[in-house]
Image (cartoon, rainbow, N blue to C red; front, side, top):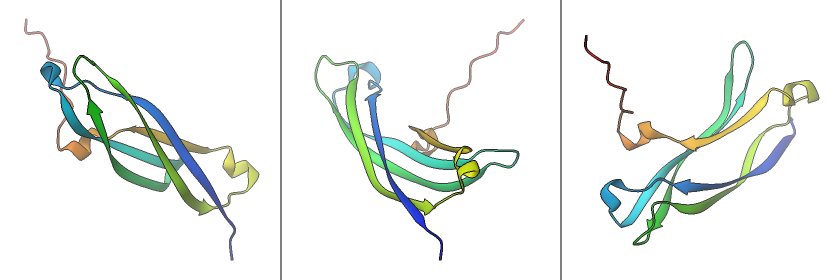
Length: 107
């Protein structure tokens, strides 16, 4: 039976402003992932969250907090633990939108 270690992920960030100062609510697609980095990176845990955020009139961005309790993975050996990286970020693919590419100049 392997031991597990539970941790909390606490994120504080600014929600991007909505286009043309549109005011209201939006769900921010937030992904948290624990990866064991190395020659062959291995995703140990990942989850997508839709964090509700409200933007009030006159604001160009708003802070928000997401706390995730109980992330549980098998307890690694001390050398393995050094290669663990926790990634937190906006997941544009979850929106169904493709990031815009920079336009190339025509000659």
